[in-house]
Amino acid sequence: MKRWQFWLGIVISAGFLYLALRGLNIEKAWEAARTAKYGWLLPGIAVYFLGVWVRAWRWHYLLRPLQKVPVREMFPIVTIGYMGNNIYPARAGELLRAFILKDRRRVPVSASLATIIVERIFDGVVMLGFVFLNLGELARLQGDSGFVGSIREVALLGALAFLGALGVFLAAAMYPHRSEQIVQWVIAHWIPARLRPKVSGVLLRFLSGLESLRSPVDALMILLTTTLIWLLETGKYWFVMHAFPFEVSFFALMLMNGIVNLTTTLPSAPGYVGTFDAPGIALLKAYSVPGEVAAAYTLVLHVALWFPITMVGIYYYLRQPLRIGGLRGAQIEPQTIDPEEPGVSK
Image 1 (cartoon, rainbow, N blue to C red):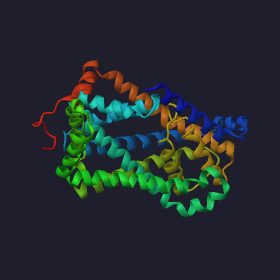
Image 2: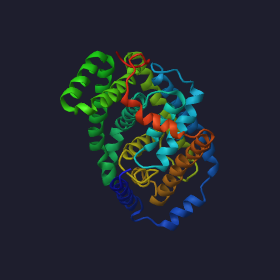
Image 3: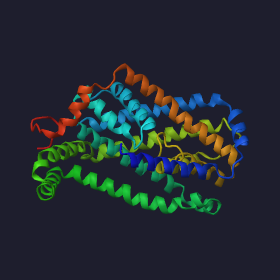
Image 4: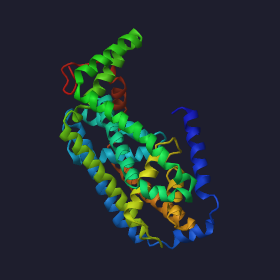
């Protein structure tokens, strides 16, 4: 990780924390957190891990053209990836789970990364769907918070970005031979000759990871599964809400879920410090939730989202850590291409 990127994340997190805590009575916020009914976290955590299991199924579904990996084997790898996202900057857990899968199942890193990017694109589309579903409500709230008021414009730009990326990936999956021709043309005209074999290997394996999108039924299944995942995560928001003395609608929590997760795509300190908290507090305040209660709820929710999955990920990683040889193999994998290997487009 380059040092400037790390410090950029720290600065952005510090700025968002300032926005989150500005004008709040910290003692009142602490009192709201101290007196919360923490028993409500248990069903929230259970619902959240059900969503993680669905995520494992979705990744298993995306990887089927490359290799059929049982969901029970995918679940620990997904939790390890979440652990990596939570303790390292720049969502390094996504790369970690690709390396883990290479180490344990010999799935090419570049191909599994393609499936992970597809996941993230569908996540972004559903998150934006949550926001657009509540655009009327959001317009009503614009006058209450400058931060919330800017979400509509950000959502429109995000929609263009995510839907554009999804369109490119769907086209690449539906027209594989044409996509290969374009890739080879770009490599031949823009990549130095000494790097062409390596770059070609990476990109061809990457294209092989898009095969699950070739079927409209499969693409629809991924979209429906992604929607279920985020509805289950919103369920956790709903359960944790009952630990605090306020109530908003499930749709409001869907909006909060969409906004905070879109904001966490920005660079930040590990664990999405600040980028998760500031928009969550701002949105709840726009719904007339007292700032101190909103801050206590958002902090407890953040910890409840961060801590259990991180501990489970550490547990699974310590049971079967990534071997140095596996990491080295993952690094050199793109340098050679085996045209007979399943999943590589010919």
